[in-house]
Image 1 (tube, rainbow, N blue to C red):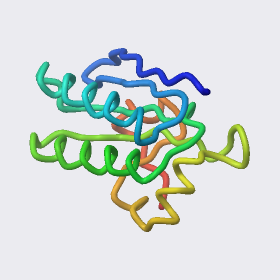
Image 2 (cartoon, rainbow, N blue to C red):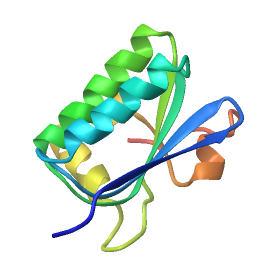
Image 3 (tube, one colour):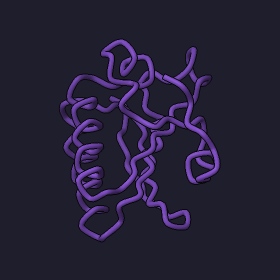
Amino acid sequence: MVAFYVTGDEHGEWAVLQVSGELDLVTSPVLRQRVHDVVAEGRHSLVLDLSEVLFCDSSGVGVLIASRRLIRSCQGSLRLILPAQGAVDGSHVNRVLGALGVRRLFEVYPDLDAAVDDGTEPLSA
């Protein structure tokens, strides 16, 4: 069994949640709650660092889409970190989002520095 963690940090105006492990039916409620907690604290600029997520199923994708909807309802910004290269030919989450046709919904960055820099353009879908 792979351990699942969500840890939080702040980088200027950005709240950052680092996610590691498998994002699935069992673990996705944990991420959903952490995103809700960040928004309840009044933070509407959120980076989800998914570079250490090894697996993501449809419930994980559902949490990402719901998080996008929640942040947008607050006129905030959601950015994802999905490195183009990594463990095995890039991010598993990036491949899943692309296969489902929802990758274009998200602003994706290769690393934390790029994600919190308002001058950096997101990666193309």
